[in-house]
Amino acid sequence: MATIVVPEPVPSPMEDAEAIMKAVKGWGTNEKGLFEVVAHRNAAQRQAIRLAYQEHYHEDLLKRLESELSGHLEKAMYRWMLEPLDCDAVLAHLALKNSSPDYRVIIEMACIKSPEEYLAVKRAYQWRYKHSLEEDVAFHTTGDLRKLLLALASTFKYNGYEIDAYQAKAESHILHELIENKAFNHDEFIRIFATRSNAYLLEEPASEYLSALRTVIHCITDPIKYFVKVLRDAIHQHGTDEDTLTRIIVTHAERDLRLIKEKYYERDNITLETAVVKETSGDYETFLLALLGH
Image 1 (cartoon, rainbow, N blue to C red):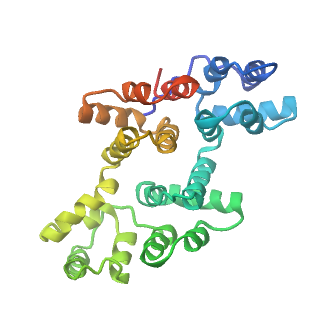
Image 2 (tube, rainbow, N blue to C red):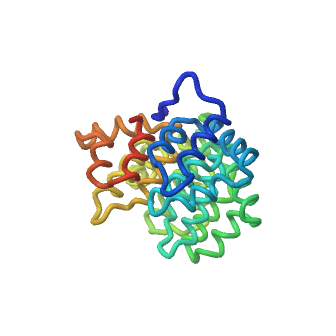
């Protein structure tokens, strides 16, 4: 359930492009005028605006926004204006190349997106960076982490609910033995977790070890609850993690951010908007609030 508010009727892409030019030309940027357009358009509309702007003004709108904005606002705006698959590709690339890598981004995409969505992200990554996500994962990681992330990055994961009970029980037994021996880097352990559906992994309830592992699997089986935790960690840690806050809001505003907001309120008895206001400021705060539905 999306949170962005799109007006009816929606102005034409050319009208929106003209409004953006009016907001950015001259001395200083009219951020409010900019937000009134881009924060209230869906992905297809934003791409149409980019095309109209390019055709009419003969310049790349993204490059213009990069030159007009700065800091966390510039990052948020840039990612919001990208085509969603391209945005995911950029986020995956940054997650691997940053001085402090955030492998959660790769794991989220591999485990929470549908196989078809994830394959599309990998194609976008290949198109943008001229090499595969798997190649970059291999280059930027080592050891057991590389083995696990490569398995997730390169596998087309079964996403259905039809389960072979015999096979599930047999592989549950394998997991039980591997966990008992703390062999979390074993090839069979990684293979099962990288290739089996969520329903499959939850099929065998007998082992207390598997019960403990369900805590790990929770980010897959309950994505909304997982993203609430990610947001809470980003907001409540010493010094707000704006990159993570931006990533979750920008990439979920047109998907399930309303559900995340509801679960966030249930967890903390405070709205996500209130938390954002408390931990951010200025035009960056205003833009995030617009994506949250204000």
